[in-house]
Image (cartoon, rainbow, N blue to C red; front, side, top):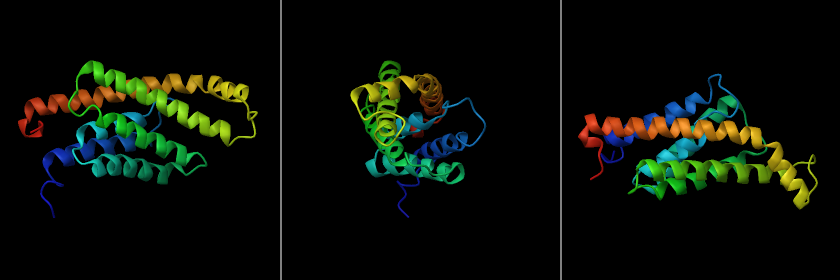
Length: 174
């Protein structure tokens, strides 16, 4: 097996992401989950794009095996992949302000994409601009808790990894 794929850095980052996926399975405040933070962190820290996409999406899939599948999964996974893309933009700029901006941007992107899918696939909203706005307004309470969860978990993951880098210099970027 390739040593770079199983380096301590890759194993620790993968472990953080898998732990975060498990956090979706424990009782929590509605939508206060690490979903976007997982994607952002993976995109920012994995050097290989396939790992940046695969590990967070696989972690999401594993947790969905336990939570159950639903009709909006495609939108969730697309959103998740796009947030990984935002994370890749952070690779050489992992500092507080860029991570904060990317976290807010990722949360907003997830909110917009998934609720657009709800509107497009739901008989509860008229298929008009007004119906779309109604859908977004109805989802605002969920956005609030999602944003708070993303900010919290991004702080934990990025901050925790930063602290780990201080104690284990081998984790730092080459």
